[in-house]
Length: 193
Image (cartoon, rainbow, N blue to C red):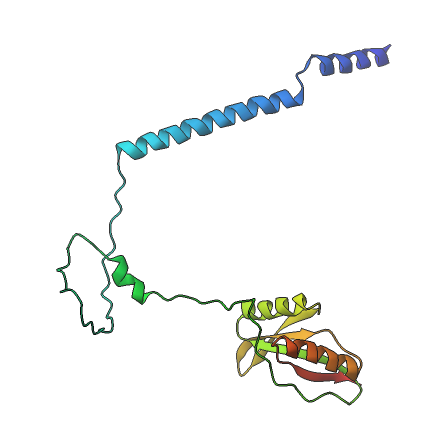
């Protein structure tokens, strides 16, 4: 008899409750209402009370003088303007990234490896980890697995990019040629016999 009561009690609770998706719908509606109220309130506050940001003092930057033959006379500067775009533009540093579609310069061909043994190729040594990771990615795009190892040179940390171990001189020379053709200079290091 006790078993039947448990079953009925279980059925009763499951059939009278609301489905889970309905709770989700109500929660979503409440959340969107609150978000809309905050958005409208922020827009109302933004138009009623303008936010003032204290201006930083302008730094004077010396620029090289440029001779102009047909130049207009210099206009007096307005004290209400903190900076001028055209005065700042020549002083900006612009990073120029290399064009990936342009062919890479050819690296001088290294002497071929003839002595049998196990070799690894070092494809660069960098002071910044980001540069080493970039080189590792360049090599990976050629279908070659490489790894970055941290080392020490003259008291400074360096990041060296190494290929997987190669067991035959032919494999070493073939991989060196591939990397050389793509502008990556390599150094063959003999690991063991």
